[in-house]
Length: 260
Ligand SMILES: [Ca+2]
Image 1: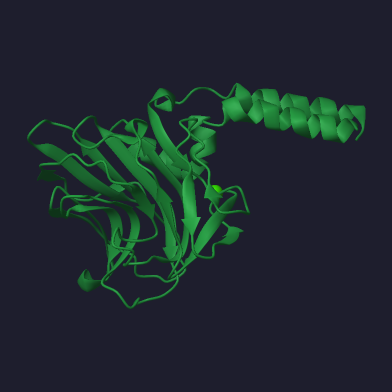
Image 2: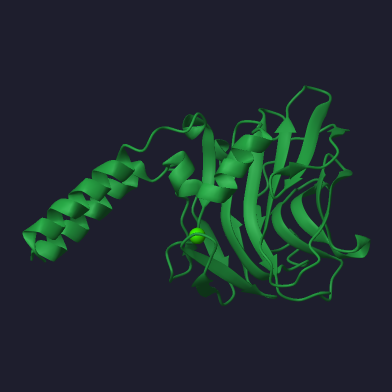
């Protein structure tokens, strides 16, 4: 590699590492961006080390940003619960993801995008497409359905959804945004859970999502519509600069291999 090119790469790396900090950078809980492109691990790019294990036969495809995982009806990601992932009944939070469904209608009543296991009962399907209500994008937290008011009607079309919770003690406010626009807020009473997180399947290993999921991120803040739009349009990496810590070593490795 020419020396000049190395200098350019150094410049790009430093630029990425010094990206202006998003206000919520310090509040990031987990980020599963599926940019690895191979293997059985879904790396957590938040720096919290909550890597997921990919079950089944993942297909790595081009995503909304970088690579993404294609779920085929038997593939899902399981992320072991840890204290760093605890948000229910503790703090405001936002769970966001890009996804598109490839199969309408699927054989089951829901397509789960993000779910949490529960040792005690029900009510932990954080984000899903509800086929029994015509394909509406919904959340089922606190034992109650919260509607986005938007149906994922177009097969193979990307949708961005964000579940925003304002923790209020006994009564919590939850709103489901689709493509940055809010549905009707709902008041729920969230329960604690220490169950594992699932991407692409229901906790009972049913309700498989069939299609592509990308950019799953959990942030311990109730984001506004404008902030969600920035997140969906620019991508987690660019907005949160979450990889700054990891990016420099990667860049240095690239430079060193280039020089060699
Ligand atoms: Ca990605």
